[in-house]
Image (cartoon, rainbow, N blue to C red; front, side):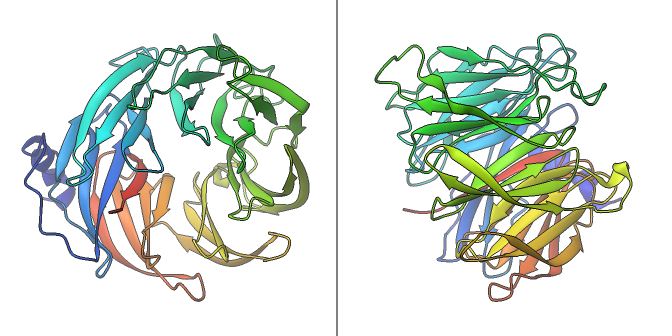
Length: 391
């Protein structure tokens, strides 16, 4: 019997908070979001040892939740916000967002409240710079009603209020199967918190908003000037990431498997480079997904799914943020939806959604290159990986 067959049994016996294990300076806690159509129960809190790169397979806590596919942790690590990527045909057909309090000593999660996202398949969330609002991206698989951006006020206690503003965008209709309607894939704030950027896969655009809740609490977002950034037809923008200095940004485009590089200033993105993740390869290889930069700002990591199933490593030019490819490495699984660099920077963890496992790979902090695989942990449909660190 393969090891992965034991995983559901292990999970079933671990629901609720477990005894806190003795922690060392190398120990961190890992939160795993997942899809629950199979055997996964929701959110898993696990112990990770950055000295060995090993995830303890025995969960510290399992939180039952429907399709908690994306996890957003507040900067002070007091609250966790989770999108419940529900929609028509699923066990729970209603898209929702959940808020949890994080115990500062044990990291135990406790539900604060849950509200509707007023859209189908919410796939991403992020907090405003002042943590007063949560931006939720309702992807919406079906053409009707299509994807939307929802804005939810957040209380100081982490409690979510109901949606106060919704935004929708016209689709590009370039791809007759995937772009008939809007599909908002992610939304994030600018480094200074004054602007919000919403990436719409169905529109081939980044939509730009000014964020000013004091001017109008019921309509905290207003279109900026310019109100959008045009991208190549049929490219399908997915995730945007700003550089640590706030002067540049990178964007993955799912359908064309590309990364766009931008200069950024005062709400304006100016493209300076376009990098192909699967140049010359068949369409089946093209499914750009997640991107994360190393803490030192020297390297960018990007996952490409499809039949490619690769992790790409790029060197970042310190002056322009333009990219130079250093490495392509197999993720040793299928559909790397998300990944995370551990707090020590010595390992990269990959959530292979369709092959049902988390793969831990060594990383050389000096060269940025990925090395050998140190662990393959069975996990049903993992979708997001976030670390908690002691303050």
